[in-house]
Amino acid sequence: MHTIITGGNGFIGSRLVEQLRLAGHDITVLTRSPQRVPDGIHAVEWNPESGDLDPRALSAVDAVVHLAGAGIADARWTRGRRAAILNSRVDGTRLLVSALREGGSKPAVFISASAVGYYGDTGEQISDETAPTGEGFAAEVCRAWEAEADAAVGIAERVVLLRFGTVLDPAGGALSRMLPLFRFGLGGRLGSGRQWMSCISMDDAVSAVNWAISNHTLEGPANVVAPEPLRNSDFTRAIASGLGKRVGPPVPGFALRAVYGQMARELLLGSSRVVPRALEAAGFAFRQPDIAAYLEKHQGRGQ
Image 1: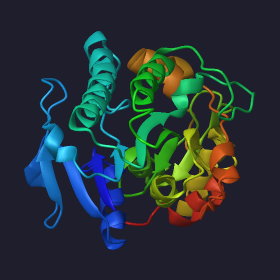
Image 2: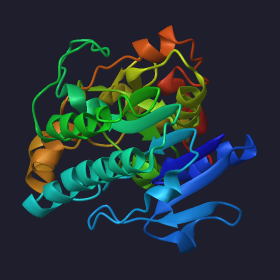
Image 3: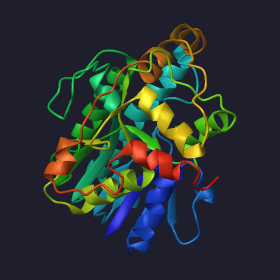
């Protein structure tokens, strides 16, 4: 298959590119930085801010995987940062769909990333793909992002919206930033620790994207999370246990809110009790369904 990927240099995208290459896919990466694309992978430069993308680059494409977007947890949500997060997703998705339409491309599947932030703070409520959208900035971003992706309906045979939870990989992302604190015995729960977390291992996250490309029954929203959410306190204990360390002192909620503002309220202290009904119904098999067990076993890998 000829697969086009945006965000192919990123946290999830770089692993996906490697897996698809090993599977024999013909890959084109749309990127602002062609020099960062590995040898043997075709790179096409694009710029969502300026609307630069040659529709001819999308000709004869079988699958599109759109992962690009400014990191939502990389910095405090100032007004400028919120605009960058939202615009990077809206502008990039709009440009991609427009180029497919203009070039007359009819891919078998258009896959766009989204996030479980779509549901807002779920509290104790279990939420699957039929749950309503929530409140807050993350939910606002996801709604706008998915609305642009839905414009690909009628262009692609299938449109899949992958709502990612927290993707865990000791070599990168949120988990890699936490591990040094835990190694020094300073890793503790956030706030009360009772908030639910919807997470997934990197291996399962990448496999879910690959599954969405090839599984013709998967369409619409699909939560990319492990089957069992866990509370922040259990998440914390699992990492500490795997490292043979004691759990560190808790981080007070007021301190997190003082430092990170709205981002802390939504991403660190808010509850996300989300389950992957669509993936399970389509027959996807998780390699690491138990996140606590995964953390105890794998949190030091690659360090």
